[in-house]
Image 1 (tube, rainbow, N blue to C red):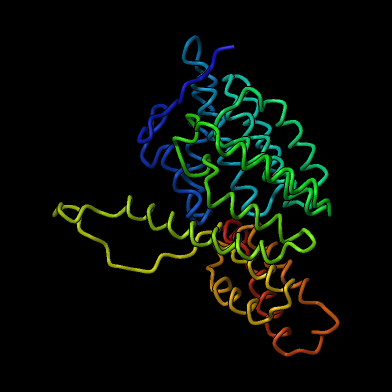
Image 2: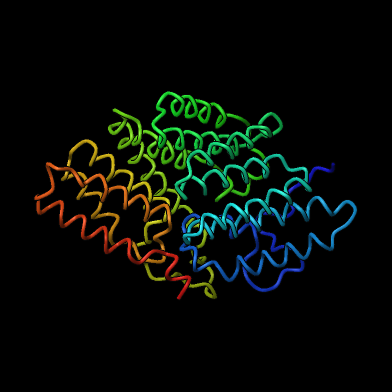
Length: 344
């Protein structure tokens, strides 16, 4: 089977590109963006790359299949973030088929990681582990950070099922996989690079479900939040106009909104504080999280906030007005998820 090289340059715009950003740009922008804002371009690019794959032949076929796989990956992620993990699993299946046609082991293992992640957020941890095991079949052929993501998702699923030992083993495997040489998909950055910020966030999400792990979870969550903010600032700097070009004047300064990933890590921080019985810590984390605009309230953010609500339902706190206030704020927050903006 032919092995695909990267189908697009970092600034390429795709097969017979029309107006709008290309696939590499959307892959880089997606983590910090509100998913609904990118939907028109994601659907446009998906249609273009699927059409290109169907028409490609000979030496161009593998590259076209890889492009179709990455475009399908983007669609799957929007399904997940906008509240339909079942559709995300199905779309990742399509992305996996294109990755197989491309002979792209790095894309294949990332699609299995995405399926596992979608099953995790759907509340199916055993199914998530099944996808992780299937992804492990490609591990010996894959380079890059895709395997690190796969093992980190596996760790979260073990932790949710209460198997702290298996979760810790998977975290160690994720750390080891993160030291491998990057592959061509890592070079695109964005969604495809499982960087230090995401590793810290996934570890926080794992540790918070392990008995005695709340303190480490809080530390990892704080590290993730800082790194996500640094990455968001760097990404914004790349998109700023050139102040030396009179045709490209600088935009007014404004505080950038929190990215969905940073928001999810903040919710994990609140949960860790709740498990450490620090109501002041919970409130401080919620004060950071709850102003998040609805279009950025992805499924992982909303479900993570709901876990905080559940953790606050302790008999000792049942009549504490501070707890009631926080629970009511969380309920209001969760009533308007990002998916409602897409449906509207």
